Length: 199
Image (cartoon, rainbow, N blue to C red; front, side, top):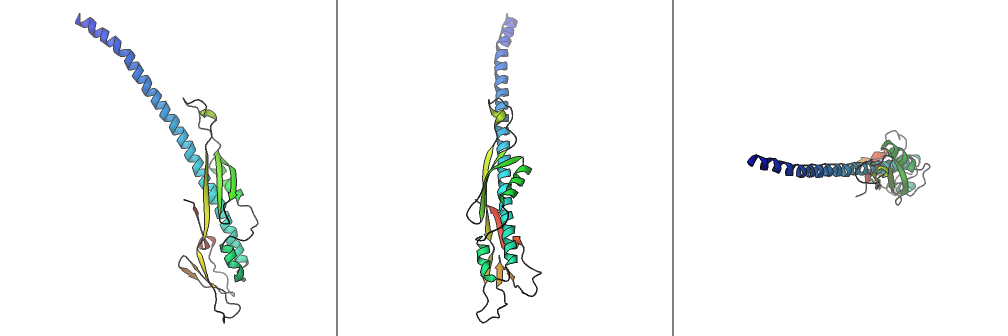
């Protein structure tokens, strides 16, 4: 009689066991779906960050090139450092290239003021199939803003200085004394400007 009761108890526990295992499997697949979505979203944010930085760095390089071209005309320097000059190439092309390297494409790319870019991207890859309906066609979208900041202060020459004397530049504590007769040692784009993601 005792043996019969044990078999009956065992038979009752089996459906409970199946229910618990099934619930655990469902939770595991649900966590997997959340993980897939999070990974896709992180990929989108990485692509957006890289694209925004690329656009801003391209703009920085063009501003530095413009400063080098006009170096003998110090009256133009402040406008360059403020970003208030025309440049030739659209910097958003660099954003598109960097987004593509990160398996995404640019939806929008626009200047943010004179010294920045905001870029929105969408992943090329979908979240993928999961137990959550509709995820197989879902793509993640994220945006980022990168800004350019001048590192330099211009020290204007004294009023009685010779006309061919160029102003001194102090860029993050580094002093650049520029000789108009020898312009081979000039600060580079990274010396003149800082590029970083906006907070």
